[in-house]
Length: 244
Image 1 (cartoon, rainbow, N blue to C red):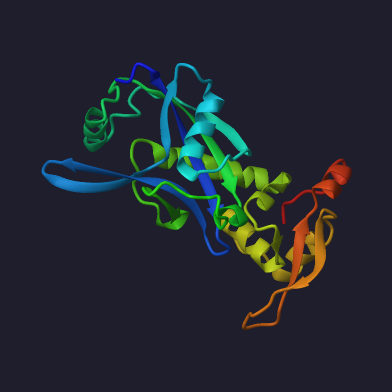
Image 2 (cartoon, rainbow, N blue to C red; image 1 turned 60 degrees about the vertical axis):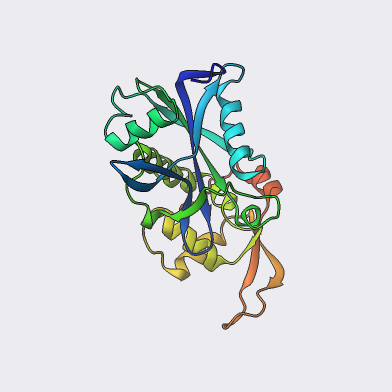
């Protein structure tokens, strides 16, 4: 065991992205041999907390090591400290032994963050070679209790997107209303009437149309919109919300 880490306290991070088609989670591939068979499992990025860092610093370190960029909109989700949270799957225990990880009780503090399409496509964003984006509809059984952690993160996103402008942490800097509607439908798990959606958006002053339209598309070019932080700060006291 590395003497520089706290053996019973870890941090796991749920990184959520949107590619205009799906909401995906950035997961880590875990290779191992178990009962003479090779397995490639998926897990959340995480690590044990070091003695010389607080848990927020640990989460930022994990994300920087994973992506190559400093991600600032990181939020603490909750702690997971069930007695047997590591012991449900024998293959998980074998993997812990293989990396000299403590097999006894480990408490993890989960964080989640939303990553914009602009950042994902930037040259700065260089994910770890073992990392891959997986659409939430295609996520199977993950290591440990990581499915539960992701489900709680998504439930939190569903609540936040109703009242706060978190959707714009997932959308590109300029977006169409159809792209925005698709995101809301994926998050909320429902379909919205196009006319009603646009009528609602027109009542939100911080979603601002710009003098630019799509190009090279096989349909009528749609107008782009942007989220104005300045307008939001000036009008947030007003009685509008982002639930559509």
